[in-house]
Image (cartoon, rainbow, N blue to C red; front, top):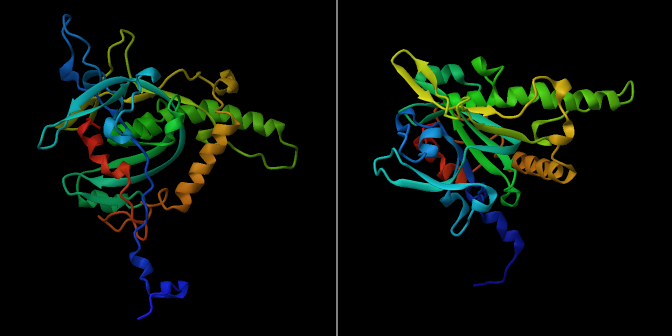
Length: 310
C-alpha cells in the first residue's frame, strides 16, 4: 500500500461536502426599550431596558474586551427565552456608523419559516410575517473590530431604512436625501461634460443613529402593529442631519480615503463569499441558499435580537 501524496488524488474527494469556513462578524443589535420600566423619581435610570438603543453582547467580542473608554456602558437585559437568563453586554443610546451593505428576508412568526425578500406574497400566505434585516456596519470608535452585523426586525428595520410610513423620517432615507444627495451634486458638477458622473453609496459617509428621545430627554415610544396586536417601542432615528442637501458640509461626514477603501474591500468580500446574496434564493420557508454553508457569529446570536424586544 502506497502512502505517497499525489495532488491528483484530490479528485476522489467530494467537493460538495467540503465545509466552508464561516465569515464571522460581531453582532450589534437595536433594543426597542420597554415603556413599563419607566423609573420612579427615586430610582436610577434603568438604561437600555427602558430607553432602548444599541447593544453589543459580550459573547460577540470575546472575553476581556472593555468598551468603556469608547463611551459604552455595561448593561444587560433578561432573555425572553425559556431559561430567562441575563444577557450581558455593552450599551450606547446612539452610535455613528458607516453602512456598507444589507440583506433582507421575510420571517413568519411562530413557524421558523424564512422567505426571500422577493417572495413577500408567499410569506404572507404562510402566516404573520415581518422583515428581518442584517446590515454590515463599521462603528466609529470601534473601527479596530472591523465590520459589525446590525440585526433588526419589524418596525425597527423599517424605521432604519425609511420604508413606507418612515420614508420622511427614516435613517437611511434621510441620509440619502441630504448627505448622499449633496455628494452626488458636487461630484456631478466636478465631472467633465459628456462624462457620466459617478454616484456615492452610504459607506462614503458617517451617519449618527440613536434611540428616539423627546425634548424632555425621555424615550419616545411609538405604537406599532394593528388591531389587538400592538405594542409600544422605541425606534432608531437619524441624529444631526440638516434639513436639506444644500446645508450639508461634506467634510463633517466623509469617512476618508482609507476607510472608504476598507468598506469597498469588505463589500467585495461579502459578495464573493456569498454572504450578501445568501438570502436571495431561499427556498420557500427554507434556510440560506446552498452552496453557502454558514454558521457565523451573526447567526448564532440572531435570537438575541428577538429577546431584545425588536
